[in-house]
Image (cartoon, rainbow, N blue to C red):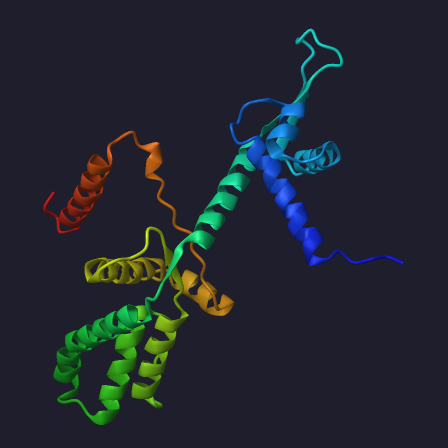
Length: 256
């Protein structure tokens, strides 16, 4: 009788694989016995997963014939593919550990504000063409404003105002944002809400990408900024981030 693989076995296997990857995270050649010690696993487990990782192209192996030792030492190191896998795992772990941020209220208000601004922009143009705004035209305008602002669906006449509310509320509630360090204060809350909408606006400029996201029903983004790679003081890093944003804003306005 064949037994199925349970959740525990899967999780244990994933953890063992991760331990091996971490043991080789330096990118240098590591002796087999040192891999076992660093990973904190048994020799049977280490041998099994090193073979699997080598087969997957995430680890490479060589025998050191020049060490003067016998039996010859066996060495392992991560391939570029293995390095990328390890980085992806670290990113996922950071995302899971980040503090959840209640973005619904902030983003819902911003979405509606953008829609209102779009309506105010479009209304005079339509008024000039049509000689006035009928209730039906106002409903159509609201729908087009939403489409122009967010680009998610094609507008239609039926129940326009209610659909507008349902859509903006649903979009806001569907956003799950996790940040680290945690948001503290209204200025940080405001900045993050704006950043999320700007980010979505850039992503959904591509019609093809909008359609793929709409079809899939979910968009997942991991965003990690690791400033430990920069040898600056925290004050210098803070100043560099701020002035980088200022310069980008001036550049967009054609002032640089």
